[in-house]
Length: 457
View (cartoon, rainbow, N blue to C red):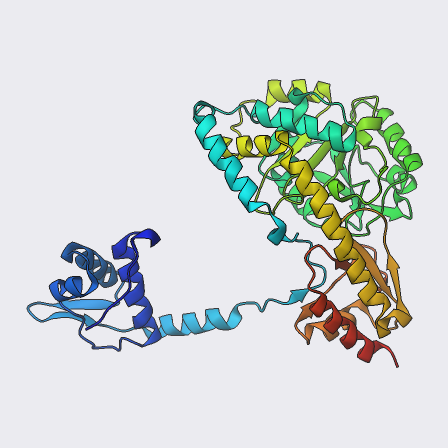
């Protein structure tokens, strides 16, 4: 007798039964023409009601997997050839996942699950009224107050909660900025830079230009050659080069913004919590005396990618404009998540988590660099790093192209990203991104050995 293990905790029983029978039909375990058990016998054998079996059978019949013959029972029709072919092709075309030396995802194994679950239960017990109340477009005031406190502690930024806008990811906030400032603006993007930005601005029908970087970051000379009136930059830890914009250059771009009324700077401070230096440069927002800087940051980098909570801090004039122009929007982050994060910050757990992760990443960084320095590949490598962020640049002294180097590693199921992939400038760089936040040392060792064999004569 056909039997399946069903679990009430895994969803509707009829759905489980339907899925299990369908899977056995597709796999061939239940062959075409096979007779299925009667509803009563099958229900008794699986410990469910006959209605549950009937519902599962009805679903399978509606999709053409089985049919019913009056007074005889239910029979398997099998899977049509085109369906089988599609399934085989789908499996064949599924991309192979490679071990990635440049993957910027953080190590989620260090996420404070026990503390987070404790805060969630506490929030559910103590904040019931707030959980069911409408949420302001800018986000819950409790979270905005917590963020303001965090910014003062970590970045020496003095901001009002009313200047803070909470959203589900920085990409959503980018679209709000475009609407707030107007679609007729011309955006300046760093080259090389975060590729998705150009897609977002293009999707929002906004004009943009790419501006080259020099050794200090975005070049004022290159900026003056464009029609850009809004800059989108990451001065603390530029991706992908890792550059930190020095203080003099920060004042230069602030002076540029102050020259005209319609000029603004979008400052993306995406992983500033992991600054190694004890005395990091102040944010552009802190240095700004003309209300020209919009500051952005996210908790996806400091906590986990799945926590889609980001925020921006607007100059007071733009905060007022947001309330007048865009306050009709609904908040994109649920109240439960906002209150949980607010309590996580205010009770000091976020600061403890950051301090713990800083130590972990410093050790991980040291281990990765030591592995490179002690390898044979060290003969042709230069490590380009600064005191910020979770990645650095590995420069290779070789005549092989970036594509050839990537191909060598791809054959060993390893991926690496070249700096040239993020730039519109057509030049050979031989610079590669090493992200150590979640890097398996054994994979790194394998990659170094493979490159040594292929690049060192």
